Length: 114
Image (cartoon, rainbow, N blue to C red; front, side, top):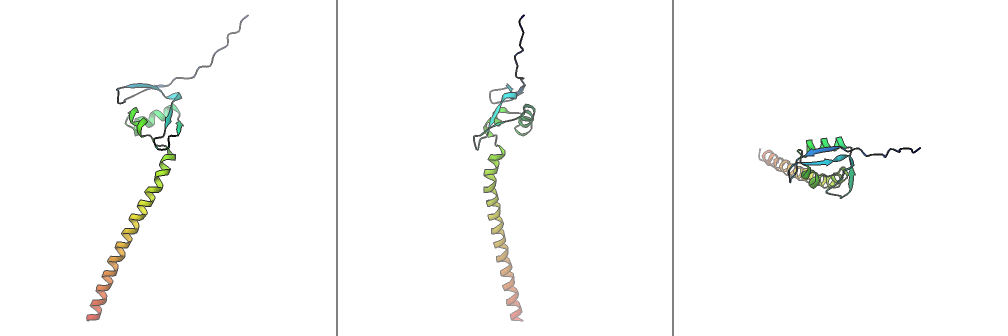
């Protein structure tokens, strides 16, 4: 008597996306995305990844491959943005101080002349 042992099979989840070469069909179940900033690999659940490509990357797989940025990659650039925002805010406040000083000087000269 011979026992038949079932071999485990990984599920295949094929999705069709647009790309630079035309339509492509890709198995997202075993797909690993690579962040374009940190170059770290990232795995996703296939349906989440498919929805991400359709909504955020306009159903274009090539765009996803070239421009995907992970949360870790966004965190590295968010510090630079915060610095830029703060510098802009400081310059606006300095401008406001200058305007207030000139108006104060004008009021002082007017009060002295009266």
